[in-house]
Image 1 (cartoon, helix red, strand yellow):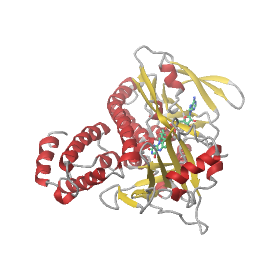
Image 2 (cartoon, rainbow, N blue to C red):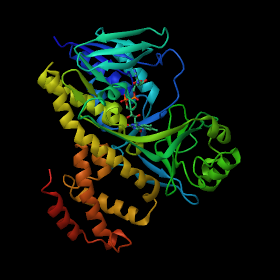
Image 3 (cartoon, rainbow, N blue to C red):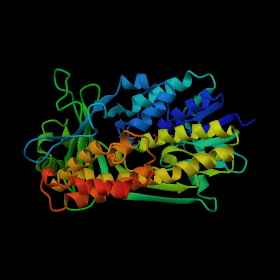
Image 4 (cartoon, rainbow, N blue to C red):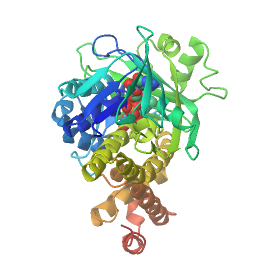
Length: 450
Ligand SMILES: Cc1cc2nc3c(=O)[nH]c(=O)nc-3n(C[C@H](O)[C@H](O)[C@H](O)COP(=O)(O)OP(=O)(O)OC[C@H]3O[C@@H](n4cnc5c(N)ncnc54)[C@H](O)[C@@H]3O)c2cc1C
């Protein structure tokens, strides 16, 4: 009893979760609304590449796929900052070259996860089948086959919604009394552009970095791809004199790039064309809860908690959901109500925290990273980390290179920021900083927190 599971959505989280569940011996049927991306053109939308870091890597190791993904991942050791004028500046992410994030193609990662899933006899992925709703009491799930138009229903012991930020299952759960939901859009949209490989097939900019053009209220970033190209993303407000809505002619778009990102002009492919043919995406934070109903259904990944992409953690957090759900199954077996309840209790506080951290990091990326005080704080932070490696771990590292709960990273990160601000107040260089005062602050304010 309790061994047949329906998953809705074979995206990143759904395909990974299917493998975790199959390893436990469950019979897993995954229903995916899109056609099989391995057989045709990859649908455009969302991001082309993603930053994969420690939490995601941990999950990939658990299902035995990391070694293969490593081969298609490009290490990014830090941020390469592009000012409007002047020299590029490199800011390392971690303490040394052993700490880096990885640029990975979203579609290749998804396809490799599906390939692995289909190696398990007890997983079946049903493509072109769109979930249209669910009877939450009986557990019956309803689908439409988009090729044939056929409507059908499926019953399993339990259903897990991995159907992304516009989740159909979450829509169903909205009808439940006590189900909370909020969806908050940023005033910024995003547009992807391409920097092609150099003629010899190499990279036109430093390969092992995340490139960033911080410009106060907006920014351009670029992540490397295996073929030598970079995918650039402009994050920009919709409104305003130079906002996305006002950049409505090729001339205006070209002028905007010339003014703010002059060194990108000769690199971006068909800028003027692409700016108009490529879609503009929205960015939102989705919070919801509780993510389960009785033993019948649970939500996981973006379906439960979509976040803005500025900490590069949406997929990593969704993969960590899978790790935690798997641990909960290990404890409670097929007592799904207990499994879901424990999974939700552990994850909700942490996914709320990463949602806040991601919003905060947008301001850091677009506005602060070129600021003198910010750069001094970064130097002090590195020094405190060296002196107190167990107590003062930089916030970025806690989120990206460790598996500290996100809520701990948020709480400690805020206190650490106050310590950094106190130590850098009125100082113009690290040689002026009083590290004995720093030691006292670290001991007084951080030692008592777990
Ligand atoms: C611009 C951008 C950049 C990002 N960069 C990063 C990054 O660098 N690092 C990172 O960790 N995260 C990043 N993210 C976040 C990451 O993309 C998501 O967190 C991740 O894709 C969530 O995985 P998921 O499986 O929950 O949802 P999805 O990847 O959206 O998958 C959902 C799946 O469900 C299917 N589906 C939807 N509705 C139905 C239905 N009704 N019936 C059946 N199937 C359905 C969809 O077709 C899809 O296959 C970024 C996001 C954006 C928008």
